[in-house]
Structures are given as structure tokens and as C-alpha cells.
Image 1 (cartoon, rainbow, N blue to C red):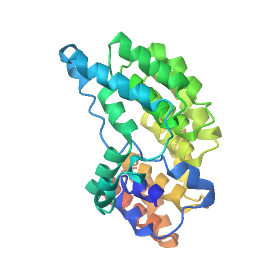
Image 2 (spheres, one colour):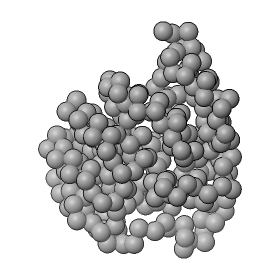
Image 3 (tube, helix red, strand yellow):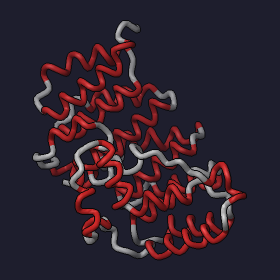
Image 4 (cartoon, rainbow, N blue to C red):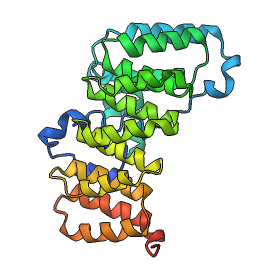
Length: 279
């Protein structure tokens, strides 16, 4: 169930698929697909780094160090107090579940954008050496919010990590960094990554940064054999597209057989409707 719970953070229509299994070749990807994007990283220290009590930083460092070698399982699996939260069936409910069952998210928010040398050193150490892949991913994203190009090689190297969780975080980090030089890495991931989810996320990033080939990759994904890939592509097309994409999606709607993907396409079409007459 967890992959679909996380997917619901992105778009509620996918909840309609809750009773169905995730396709086998996407099951490894779906568990991480939308772990950070639907929840806003506020990065409070970006605006007030000099005002943060050193005791707060020391506590966050201890939490990070404790998680470096921990097993990458969800806190919800052993915490009875989260049972009712796990049963919530709204977008806000799913968001709360992710926030309070994935400690990596809270660590990312608490550490994101730090300029403190000791914190940056600990984050870099975790990103390189932590055995817990969720902690490594959180450390990468937190470092990205510093917008410091000296971490570019770290993010680029993480794109080759065996863990799809880490590769996904590396892509997110490159997009947060936002430098035009990352477009080559985005293109490589969109074309060659073993994970379809990473390919789609990278293609959306390419499109956001002005590379129209990312759009072409997403449009091709509408014909993918797995419903989850088609739904994910439709979501990003709805976010980023215009009149041309509206006309393409309206052609796909009647022939789509999966109910979740049909709902996602319909939602994307509603977002694109104001642009439907654009060339």
C-alpha cells in the first residue's frame, strides 16, 4: 500500500487505484516517487541562520548521526501512535503521514540551506558515507538548499549510486541548485536511468529548465505499458504544458484503460484548459 499512499500526495485521483498492485517493474521506484515534492520544504534557517540557537544545531546533528546506519524502514511500522494517522484518506492526511513517518523529511527541513560549517560537514559526511539510503538522500537535498556550487560534483556522483532513492535525491538536489550547468546531467538521467520514475522526474526537470526534449520524453511516456508511468507523465504535462499538450491529452483520455491514469489525465486537462487555444 505504501507506494500508492505516497503517490496520493501528488494527486488524489491515484487513490482510486489503492486496491490494485503496483506494476512489478515500477514497484522499486514507487516507494520513493513523491517523498519530498508534495510537501513544501520551508528551509527556515535560510532566512535566519544567524539567529538559530546552537543547541538546536547540536540536536539535529545528533539525530543525523544516529540515523546514518539505521535500517531504512518507516517509523510507522513500529509506532502504534501513528496507526490512526495512517488511516487518513485525504491529501492532508497523506501529507501528515509522510511527514511523521519519514524522519528524513524532517531532517531535510531542519538542516536545509545551512551555512554553518559544522552542519555542512556533517551533511556531506552523511551524503557520502551513511548506510541508510534515506539519510543519504535527506543530506543531499539539505545541502542543495545552500545553493553552493562546490557540492555539484557530490550531486553528480550520486546520480550513479546503486540506490534509486539516492539517485532520485541527487536529481532533486541538482534541480534545487538550479544552475544551467546541470542540464546535461538531467538529460542523461532522463534518457538512461534504469528507473522509469527517475527518467520521468528528470524529463520534467529538463522541461522546467527550458529543454523541450524533456517534454517529448513525457509525451512518449503516455504510451508506456505501466499505468503509473503514464499517470506520472500526465501529472507533469498538466503542470508544465500548454495548448498543444492539451490537445494531445484530450486524444489520450478516451482510449486510456486504467481508471487512475484517466483521472490523472482529466485533472491535467483541467489545469491546461485555460491554455487550450494557445498554438
